[in-house]
Image (cartoon, rainbow, N blue to C red; front, side, top):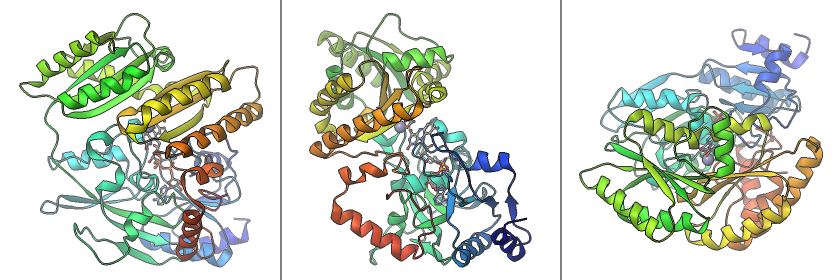
Length: 460
Ligand code: FAD
Ligand code: MLT
Ligand code: ZN
């Protein structure tokens, strides 16, 4: 170990797993953005809470920055280590610690994958309802740090709603037990909620107590083809008024083209500019209600075609058309916007940005999809072959500035669910006031006095 700081760490924690191999530095130093060149000092893989505390104390003594790291499926550069930081990966801390049948809570270590949390809940006949396509590789700690959303927010809300307690190592190495699973706790500031969405800048989540709930009734999945953008919100209002929705997601024909090229199966023939995947509770009346809503939508010119899944396999195939989009675009390293509006503000806003993006990116492949039922749009821009990476990003940043201004006018957010990370730091001020950002910086100072936890993320 040639670096004296690492030698000091290894001497302090002789059993700590430390990686310095170039392939490991690259693997653990990046997330799904693939925009920055990984250059961490080393990777630490602690096996327990005490080791995490000792690493943070060492970081304070040595002045080494620490990047908390989960599954690195993040899309905002939050887990990127490009400046000699120590990556603190929670991946070895991946066990269930406790299930409480009375409280209906599951306590897990932060490195557990979302899928493993789902499976652990299922063993007790319950569900943890936050869900999205990265479930197999993202961690519950990363979900908490980004306040992850996903495809069931319309029914269950974001990660924030499901966290009953957190154990956190703060920037000074102190251990905090936040909320301890209580349902009611009116005893001052809720530091647990402050930690959720803090992107590893305030503390390292080491354990989480998540709430579980009953599984929903069986459901039906429908794919709809729509003739134009205005129809999206009309169909949403129509279906929401007649069915109990579990999901309402949209994508465009451009997204469909990519996902089909990536192996998904076409489910509706013909060319249609917009598609919706919706899932709703199935009961004795839902089949008729869905068909009646469908016919009403067709009669009003909002729906051009549709298919309702007749089996679980068909439902999965319809979902793949939506959930496979991110992976199908990944080889292009898309420039991603992840924005949100109040649902009521969407119709006017959608028109404005359609015009803006049409003018700004006349020759680029622009892929729209997302959680339209939550007011959350994902806009992915693909780099044309004749444009360098840096020119492409410069053009996209210029457009994001215009998009951020438009969002600000409409009271929206520059980051709905992926976090600010490195990607959106410059636009934080479009969603948060100067006064708010000053308070956020103050909070950071209190939790992490030396500024060693994920420096450069969230704030410029
Ligand atoms: P990482 O990428 O490792 O880290 C993300 C941030 O959290 C970083 O700032 C990191 O420092 C911090 N962090 C990680 N672990 C901890 C910890 N224990 N303590 C403190 N800070 C920590 N996101 C959605 O919200 N909705 C979606 O629908 C969605 N779909 C996706 C689909 C695909 C195919 C992919 C690749 C990503 C998707 N994402 C989605 C984004 C991503 O999966 C989420 O942001 C997820 O919550 C990140 O978890 P992670 O463990 O990979 O975190
Ligand atoms: C999604 O909704 O599919 C995710 O947030 C991933 C993405 O935006 O690419
Ligand atoms: Zn999403």
